[in-house]
Amino acid sequence: MNTEALRDCWLMFQREYGCSVDRMLCNPRLRAEYVAAARGICECDDEQSILWSTVNLRKKKTLPSLLK
Image 1 (cartoon, one colour):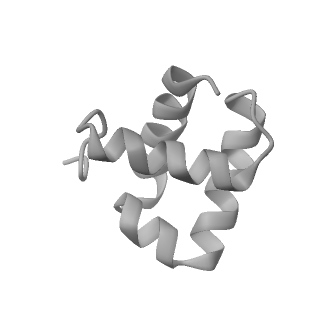
Image 2 (cartoon, one colour; image 1 turned 60 degrees about the vertical axis):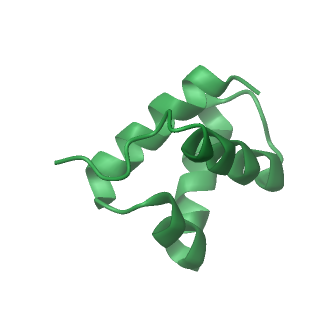
């Protein structure tokens, strides 16, 4: 898993949808769109790995909660 690419993917997704990681995880449509985007960028095809890695980035405070 390329975590730097995953972080960049999340930032692009967040700019487009203006949502938090938690909101994305709880919304099936947003989650599917995020995972589809991340699969092409992060060198990982496993949905669970993508989502857990995103949560771990948030827990480590390497992702902003919301862009202003």
